Image (cartoon, rainbow, N blue to C red; front, side, top):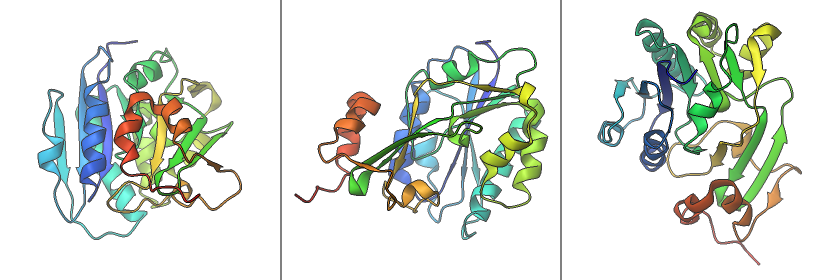
Length: 243
């Protein structure tokens, strides 16, 4: 199914450099169907000037700033999903404002769409922490992060109900509450969770690389394998390693 209408949802706030890179990743998606980029921004400084450039259709919503996380994250997603539900998007794909996405990301996710499949995701996760030049790859066998998930419009009410509870583990809750017949896992390696870009700090555990499962990457070799030529863009944000 490569011709269904897709809303690409990005929630942001006070991360202009990250959002500028995200815009490039959205623009280069090779999915053939109709898409709209839904950007919801609750930062102190509006980033509409960055979001609106480019050929892909953009819907920009501005929220009042100041809500603490995770309330801010949930409020942004609520607005984006309500828009997608009201405007007939058949699928919703979530692209984080500070993550890397290959051009095939949306297409490969939706290539697994079929009758009766309403939730698609990749359980293979790759995180990269730029300030410390550390990498982490792992698998969550029964869930996928929202940044690697696509949902059919029939699941929008379910996700809205989860968001209204204001809890942070939105993605895990969605996967846990969705019957198995509506799940499909893919493993395409089209996304990398980039941590430590300038701007408002992230709130996920990947932003705190103090555990044993992180691998040092002083020369950015692992990052280069994961993101290709984009490593040059990220290099300026990676602190110089201490030898």
